[in-house]
Length: 147
Image 1: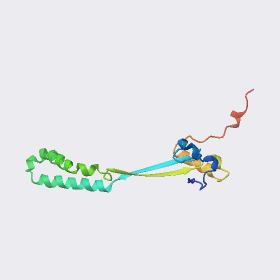
Image 2 (image 1 turned 45 degrees about the horizontal axis):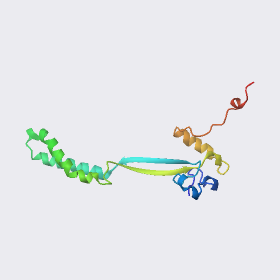
Image 3 (image 1 turned 180 degrees about the vertical axis):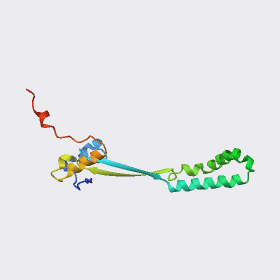
């Protein structure tokens, strides 16, 4: 069951989608709640190692080539070595960049009575993420009828 990351409260039964409406489920997320998904991308050390090995192999192969022909030979040698490592680099886990993903749930602001401070924390979160998702309190002047 989901728990609000800001308040620790759990969904009310009325916020859960009934089992008989399986087709209407949204990945088990309670109605009205906000899912926060964070992804972190970082360089893959395994990929970096493979690149270092390829560069070392290119340098080693070019040592056998006379100095005056190295510039021309380098692209050919590099293509050959790239071809040797192509299958390895295609394997899962050898991508240049890896990603981690985390999911958290946040209760709707209407649950403020169950978790005092939830609305303020939710407003701060939405402001930081530049999301205009929360209902702003209506200005009293706007709500008065015009004469």
